[in-house]
Image 1 (spheres, rainbow, N blue to C red):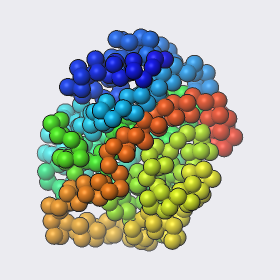
Image 2 (image 1 turned 180 degrees about the horizontal axis):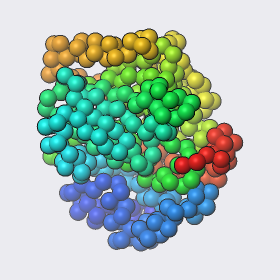
Image 3 (image 1 turned 60 degrees about the vertical axis):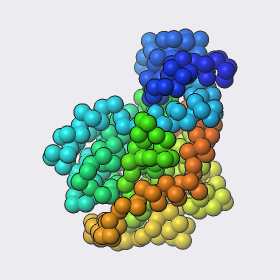
Image 4 (image 1 turned 90 degrees about the vertical axis):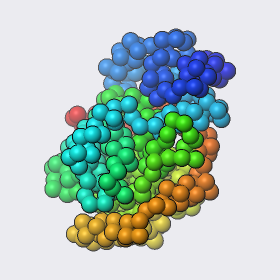
Length: 381
């Protein structure tokens, strides 16, 4: 592992002094080729990926140190955040199809146009809509397409109907990270960074343009979440980026990342704004469950509705938010962010997160926690 000075010199060389944008995965791939003393090679990572989580050799820690150093630097970190807010390289290939047909099915996500709204359904029904490597790219492309669609004014985020025997036929917002895949070593360290700097940050900040700061110009729409069943872990994190959250009266939220052995994305940065420091610490450090219909739940959820009325509630809020036009939506979102979470604050947080998550992800404690709290050793992929 190199020093922060070496990491920043490498970043400047790879991006030609920040004159071109590289996504995190591409940055680390090219960095490994050019700076083998800083980052593990693709061949070594391919071998590492075949190992169960308990058997990994910890090669990805070097990526965490490198990215932590880059994100800790104001100039390089802001540039990397900007790169990850640009449309995904594969989004353009799907854009014409979605604009013509008004629907598209991607791995882990389904997008369809319904009147003035783009409805994005998170879909991994066998695993209660959990997030993993199979859902990450499709979800980011779907977010891009929803934001770029000229025929819709707002976006709705909802979970798919589960097929898991315990919840078969029930619509669920989502169960967070796929712990079975995590335990089996099928989720790489970079997954966390690509997720939180990518589609999750796009939900909050919109799509960036290459020639302007994301805080000055962006492509944005209002986002409405419809929470049914539960929003666990990463799906609870997603709610902290929404503009309006509907929740079924029997739904609940949890952030069990400490129990799993990881850091819960940007929840440590964002949750205290919603519920205060004490409740945030209880949720993150002591697995406090927050029922949506309680006073604490209403600090995160804007409206509680009977589960059977969710479809009509979505239609009603879409109509309310679009009836007078949404011309000021982007401006108001930027103004709110300027006070609550400017990009600089997010960049500083992600510098800490990149390093800490690498050590958590590769810690023996993670395996112990998953076996103790999740019975992970007996789960099947």
